[in-house]
Image (cartoon, rainbow, N blue to C red; front, side, top):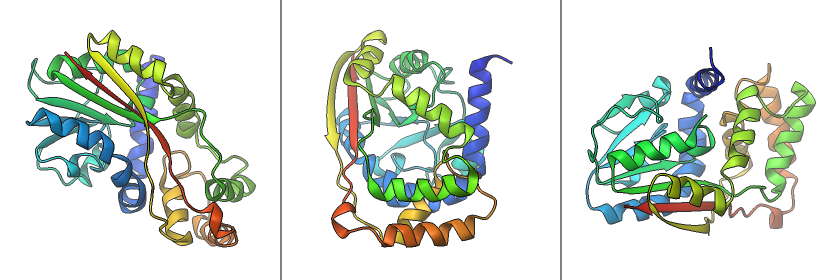
Length: 255
């Protein structure tokens, strides 16, 4: 098995295993807000959008007409879009110009070959939008508090999928990297850093979100005990440390 196939399988299995908790917490509390800048950019197309690496639908729910594609069958079962297809972003099963736009929220930091994925998105749509995290990530105390609890119990705060996602995310976490992907797909690129202010959901809900992410899900043997300890750790933080405005990169390419 090639490294690329191992990567796809690792992420598909990890997202399958965490699908229910991800949809219930991470999608609802965080990604539904983070996807908004990309949704606004894709709305310019005025037609159907392909949501690549759609997961449980954080981006697709914000679009008037979208088709969801993801490697994880379990994530797609939680996706509310009527049109859902399990598939590989690097080999899209659609004809040229099948869509008005193609978007991908945070998928490019999971693809073994993001260059191939962007080329495919540019093949099926004249407008392509991608969203990813700025790297390196600014410290955020609530996240650090949860990760410290996880590490004490599990010996690490990252699953194998989480470690790989971090490595791949570093490759695409700069404006230059995102611009290069769009340029390489033959698109005129606009790349900007955006910040999204997230409403504080409370200590318990924040911990549920962190434990639902693919980097942590399945890592611990006693999630209930870790959840209680992590909630106490986050609840003890000063209120001034709680506001979170993640820094994101929004890249939009046009033919």
